[in-house]
Length: 302
Ligand code: URA
Image (cartoon, rainbow, N blue to C red; front, side):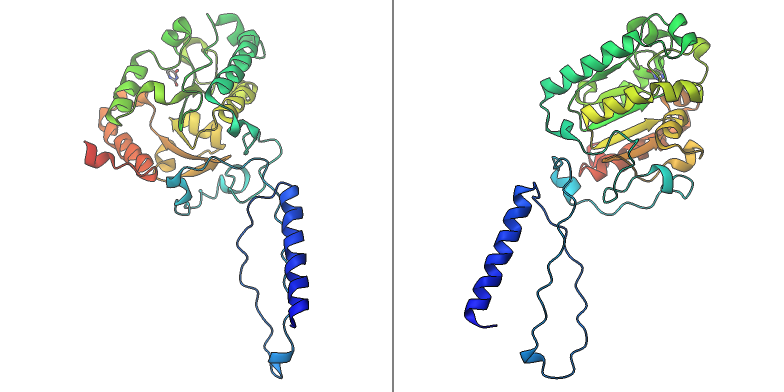
């Protein structure tokens, strides 16, 4: 290529990049090497045409990446039962109906997130989608904690204590959860805690599918606003509903799933631990696994 052709192609490339920037593109995917056709004759005077990649679809929002996540290793694939429908790979376009993909919420300050959560909580307080729950609850139990938490805990549904106090995980199971939180060397106020349901099912029965579906929009709104890097599903009701898996909780442990942009770990519910204390070791292993992904060695701290 002579000098002026070289300058022209540099200018064209610069203009292309500037047009992408104006369109909001800040990052380009690394291109796979483009296979060159085997050149048989006179390669020196047949320069390959410049390969211009199509700009990628701009993400709605650039994620506030944590260094540890930037360096994250690839995730193992989810079990076949849930992979195609419910586990969204970060590189895939999220399903339309899933409202937790990267959104503008990632840019909100802590105070703005708190304000948004309060708006959703006010809607929850008025919700009567599940007539039985609405007529038996003392109050709704929305969620608690850091509106900009890196880790979000998801339980099943409020019990009697939570129904009375209006806060998740304040009863016996909650006290045990507090001990687990303390053992992880973090504070309850560092994380955000919510449930699949925001009302207590009478007699602490399991939530029905319809109730979980009715409450899903509120849960997704909380996840979207808090925008956590990690979610812990405590127990099979949380895991099953968040990830639409039918696997027993024991089979869901020990690997990461993805929900929106969060990495999800599933473990036993604290109420199960109260009945089966020997499973505490498993939960501790799950915490070690989760924190190791964040670059924190809980083993070294214990
Ligand atoms: N169990 C749960 O799953 N959630 C609570 O908030 C309390 C007990």
